[in-house]
Amino acid sequence: AHRQWLVGAYERWRGEMDFTTGLLQSDVYNNSAWNHRFFVLSSGGVPLNGALFQHEVVFALNGLEDHRENESAWSFLTGLLFKLPHSFEECHGDKDGDANGDGDGDGDGDGGLSVSVEEYLQALEVLKKFVAVLRNGGKSKRKLGPTTTSSSSSSSNVVVHCVSFHASMCFQLALRVLGGPVGQERECRFWGALRAEAKKADPRVDPRAHLEQAAADWQALQETDPVRKPAYLLKWKSAKLALDNMP
Image (cartoon, rainbow, N blue to C red; front, side, top):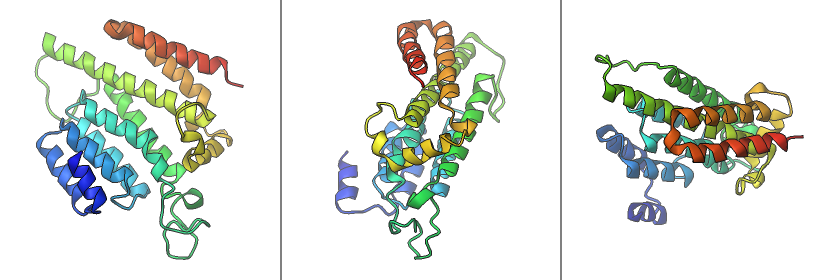
């Protein structure tokens, strides 16, 4: 918190991303490093664009490759998807969509957004494929030894993390497309652009399909992870309620 105040108050952003990269290379579970990295991104410490957004998604996936139960990396991804978009409209161009600030009006984003809906959806599809591989028992590049009780338990935990993340991702995306009660997202220009895309019947942002998937995931988790069954049941009911209230 002290470092965040310092770099924010005195605008000492240079090198902060490299700083967190070094920390995470030493310890991929370093929650403070993940948190500081997100702070730099969301506070405008680096120029945000589609390439950087997608790079950060891949960076987090690399952190999960051999450490798939890493809560900090999963949380970082959630932040990228559903908190960072409020920063997508804070580009340096004019109000006519010149996100590049070069005066030619051909900004990288939708209507002046620094990250376009298409770039966002591309990253979302990569995440979905990554989760699909893990939940189907996909192995990392590293060779695995014989299956033991411990490794079986670890594998089960990985599946729980993946499915839980996927359910939450689908549910939150659907709510934002529907303009649901999720804080200030209704006033966020990016979510407005995403809703416009949904009106074109783009299957990647079909709210009904995403709510159905979230409900199915949380129902499956009630059997896979019985310790947290009451929590999953409540989430399942929330998804079903949202489905019932759809026009």
